[in-house]
Each structure stands twice: as structure tokens, then as C-alpha cells.
Length: 365
Ligand SMILES: Cc1cc2nc3c(=O)[nH]c(=O)nc-3n(C[C@H](O)[C@H](O)[C@H](O)COP(=O)(O)OP(=O)(O)OC[C@H]3O[C@@H](n4cnc5c(N)ncnc54)[C@H](O)[C@@H]3O)c2cc1C
Ligand code: FES
Image (cartoon, rainbow, N blue to C red; front, side, top):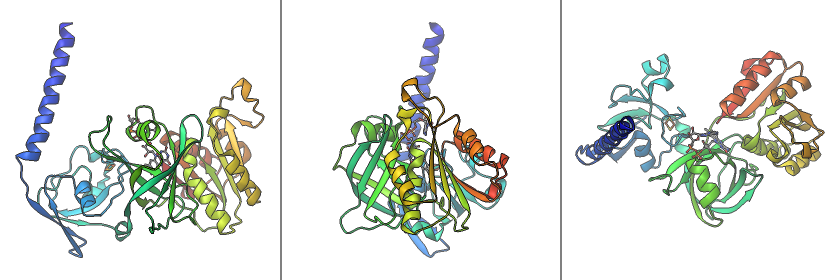
């Protein structure tokens, strides 16, 4: 009992100290207005000092990929900061290689602006746009996946490359005191420039997905920005394998629409891994693609079919099914989308059957 009281007291003291430090940093340290000198002075912005570089840039309309919402876990918010940055922080260390450190690369969600800063931003990031969209529909695809269709504001259009993602803003609610951004792959037919479709799986306890599943309403406004990312189809003409289960299907919906729109005749086999029949999604959509694309095959694989699934399709792990179907992968390409574990297992299976590592492209999430 005494032990737990001591632990509780210690935690409470640490919590109070952390809050005091944040308050002190915010109100006692007045860093004033700081200049962000971008790309050797090609652009200059003035921001209120004291905020992270990521938030400071956002406030000037410059959006940097930040799929983890600034938590320091995705490693996507890297920028070169050549002057005005403090030494590398412990939270940045795991994400920076030796070469990146030598090259002044930093995680801009961890770095705070305390003085004028000089930084380099790749030109393509200036094309990232922010919208206040409208949730047009919110549809259950299965027991834990929803499709979210967002209409862009009237008169606005967005060109996307299939495979890219958007970041949506979860407003402050009981799980988060301030808005947070999360990344979602775009599932839209790229010909539709006025909507963004997302396929979102519920992560129990997750900030954004709980909001989407429990609080989001049709017709509400939703802030989003993008498009981001370089996961995309090559133009090599090689036969392709897609591997993804659950909401990992999102970018492939966009890619298959593109393949159909452009009359691309490359062979594509999509291996979709699920536990049982209740986890499958978009079967009608996949059947429509098979009917429209003679060189496309959809292979759903169940690892633990239930007795009343009456499943006569492929069973086993998606990687094992893929290996059985494709014994020689030397001349093919693969596109993977899903958890790091699924992507790593797929890379191992693909390379074991002869696929060169440079022919494998993935989006891990
Ligand atoms: C480039 C990119 C594209 C993405 N595209 C999609 C997409 O199309 N559809 C989609 O559903 N998701 C996608 N994600 C994942 C998405 O961005 C969120 O990470 C996810 O929805 C969880 O957000 P959250 O705020 O609900 O959970 P958080 O509040 O961030 O997390 C809550 C807890 O759950 C854990 N957690 C986070 N993510 C997962 C996970 N996937 N599985 C299990 N535990 C997790 C965290 O470690 C944390 O402990 C993508 C991610 C990236 C980086
Ligand atoms: S935003 Fe994810 S690490 Fe910085």
C-alpha cells in the first residue's frame, strides 16, 4: 500500500512539474517574432517564437508530411535546418541516420522556433493545400472499417497521384485537448477531382479513428491537407502484385481506377489478407474491376475462416498464398500497404521467391 502511495505521489509530482514547465516555457519565455528564412531567402515568413517548427510552418500555410501528428514517431517531417536550431534532441535521434545528422536534417515536429531559422523545403511541398471539406457520406464497409467520402469546397479541385495520402484533422474532443492530424491513403478514382475517399480502420482507443467512428457526422466540416507521398505505380510495364488487407486496400482502389481509366494492360494480382469472412471489404468493387480489366485478378485469402463462413477460397497467410501462386517473381514488381509487420513479412516472402528488393514498393502504417 505504502509503495503504491509513493509511486502515485511521484507520478503526480512529475505530472505537475511537466505542466509547470510547459506553462513556464509558453508564458515566461517570450521569443518574440522569429524569421523563417526558406530556401536561401526565396521565401521568408515571420512566426511567433516558442512553437514547433512544424506548427509554425503550418501557421504560414506550408504543410510538411506529419503522419503521426507531431508525436515524433513517423519520421516523415524531416527538413534541413542550416541555422538557428538547437542541438539534436533525444526524440529525434532514432529517426536520423549519420548522413542526415551531418547534413543538418531535423524532425520539424520536435524542434522549437526560438530564434531566426534558415531551412530548406523541397519545392513540391509548396503545392500541398488545405481545405475545409464536407463529410458527404460515412459508410460501414465491415465491422471495423468505414469509407469516408469528403466533398471539397465548391469550386475547388485537387489532382492526386494514386498512392498518395491526405492528412485529416481531428478537432479537439475528449481524447485530445488540441487538434491532431492523421494520414490516410486516398482511395478516390483520380478522375474525380472534387472528392476525397478514405478507408479507415478503427484502432481501439485511437484518437482519430475513435472520433471518426463515434463522433463524426455526415454534412459536418472536416479540415484536411495534402496530397503527400511518393508511393505510386511505376511505368516499367512489369507484371504487378498488390498485397494488403483491411484498410490497406485504400491506395489500390485508386490505383485500379487509374489502371482502368488509362487502359493499362499490365497483369495485376491483388492478394488480400483477412482473418475471416467478416473482415473482407469491397468484394463487389473488386468483382467490377475483374470484369473491366481482363488482366486483373483478386485473390482474397482467409487465415482463420469460421465454420459458417463456408469458405472455398484460398486459406492461410497471405504471404504463403502469394508464394504458392507466384513461384518465380524475378520479373515482377510488388506494391504493399499495411502494418510494418505485414509489409516486412511480405518483403521476406517476395525476395525469397526471387523478386529484387528494388522492385518492391510499400506504404507502412
Ligand atoms: C502514409 C500513411 C497512410 C495511412 N493510411 C491509412 C489508411 O488508408 N487507413 C487507415 O485506417 N489507416 C491509415 N494510416 C494509419 C493512420 O494514420 C493512423 O495511424 C491510425 O488510423 C490510428 O490513428 P488514431 O489517431 O486512431 O490512433 P492513435 O491515437 O495515433 O494511436 C492509439 C494507439 O494505437 C496504436 N496504433 C496506432 N496505429 C495503429 C494501428 N494501425 N494498428 C494498431 N495499433 C495502432 C498507437 O501506437 C497508440 O498506442 C496511415 C498511416 C500512414 C503513415
Ligand atoms: S510528424 Fe511524425 S515524426 Fe514528426
